[in-house]
Image 1 (tube, rainbow, N blue to C red):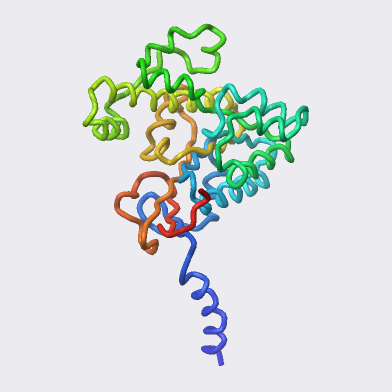
Image 2 (cartoon, rainbow, N blue to C red):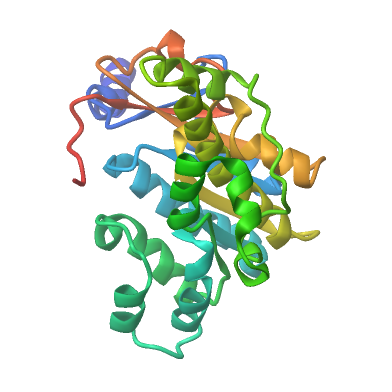
Length: 286
């Protein structure tokens, strides 16, 4: 009888795990529980949720983690995202405070094509709970300018424009593996084109790192949403955040899309503190 009862209890659990939508791992490839991720996030100063932009599992987990963090830390929570640029901050603030209509916000902010399905729930959660939401990314026109003219072109901007940027000149460690890999991918282009593309990427990472550093204060918890390539391997935004405000407790999350999620791919080991393995045939939001 005990054996039968055991099977009745355990078999549904096995069935639930037989075809998982995702499996969570730690940086060493050991399976982890969501409760462990949440516990680590609650102790962090800044959490980086590195996503695949069109992956629905990432977006669901982002919302779930944000809601659970809010339950734990309340109004100490701050949201921030790559998907909004620093010149969107005013209109974003106006919408969050109820000064303008949602239609005006969505028309005037440079929202992404997948905003309605993937980021709108986060923005409206912040609005409903009166939480700050930081527009952290560099205005795209300035990143495009760097890609065309180099990092020193930012010095030509007027003082008002420079308020939306980190302090100039922006330091760039071109020996970081992520930037070196990016440069190698540009091998078919001139060295100047490659250097400028790396500089444009660095201008985004630096702006996001600086905006997070500005927004954080003692006791606050910031959760930042960005493409995983901006924070993978503890580089990119994380490197700049450590530059602008060293000593913060950072927790990073990355995503690995792979055919078999029962074991973390070797390429994803040590990419972040936690890695979300998602089946490669998962449906996309766009």
